[in-house]
Image (cartoon, rainbow, N blue to C red; front, side, top):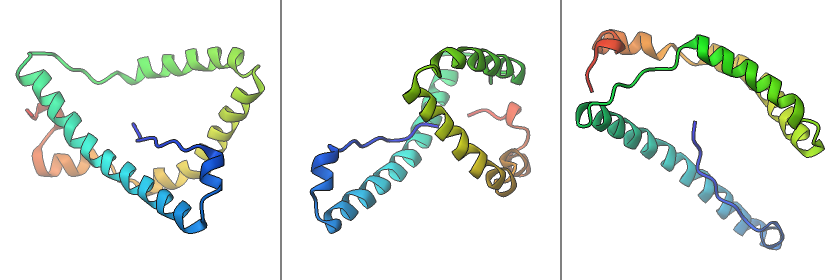
Length: 127
């Protein structure tokens, strides 16, 4: 998923009052959330145009290909993690994923189940 990134100069940010830091923090969070929902609408509209107006055939990447991609990533990762900073970032990402994914797996419903109930098989629905 894509996220909206707002960067700050650390020295300048740290010199702000706690109130101004809070304003920036909450504003950035709100902008990111707003951008996420707008992106879903925009990407859905763009997908419909590609299919309906440009005649593009769009296919979901099969899990078999994604599994091979992960194997290739693991192989490439071995070289990149020789860099201490890169390795620190990768380990931080893995720790975060390990911490939160069980909750997400348990908490997020099967969206296709609800979609099928309302609209039918997603593969047969025209946008």
